[in-house]
Image (cartoon, one colour):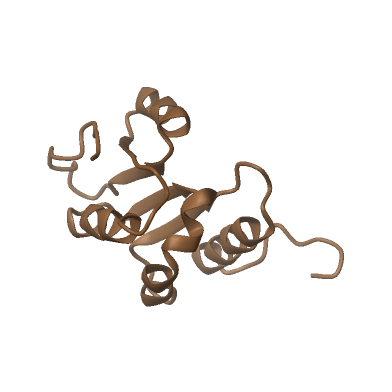
Length: 119
């Protein structure tokens, strides 16, 4: 179901393993940057796939926003933890993905660096 790059190799000590999960046409571009990519189609099995990716040691997992509806329980379970950091890629500027990205960045840096009108 998935294709990955460098995800089975041990990460260098002190570094985070980063994965990108989502539609093949989006995630394969991240291979050039050396990230582990996991092409998946939206559906009920996505949460299990992302759970396996996290269990495999990936500390940061980016996912395409079309997977958001299938990851609710997984996102809630890890919402208040520093790792794994699960981040939606707001490919079309979807409101819930942008809000989630703002929340994760705020948790990571301790401030809302995106601020804007009404924030």
